[in-house]
Image (cartoon, rainbow, N blue to C red; front, side, top):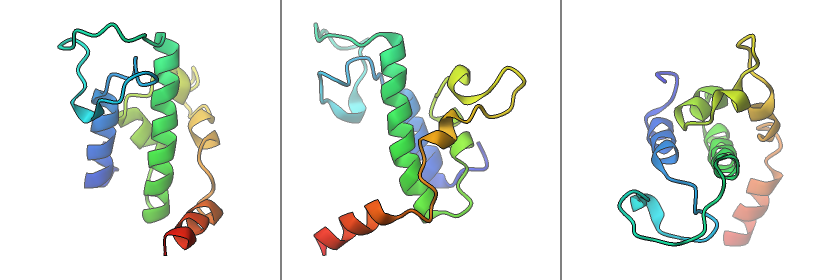
Length: 119
């Protein structure tokens, strides 16, 4: 994880520590700990919760990549708790799944469009 900047390590920890199982039905922020909650909110399956986590990793990773030319999306995904079956092939090489969710840094039209509407 030493490949990551301080902010990337902190973000990855927060993503990893979050319980994503009810992210579709509850908005309770970074304090969420389902083991302490007494909720009956509907839960996602483990696979659905991992899909939410992966999407969060892609979105946050995209912003980090735009800001840091040395950003390593693979190290970030691992630190954020994305499971091996989504990150690596049986031979240990990157599977391509992580790269598939990130726009090349040169394709900043989404960021530019957003920045132009807030100025």
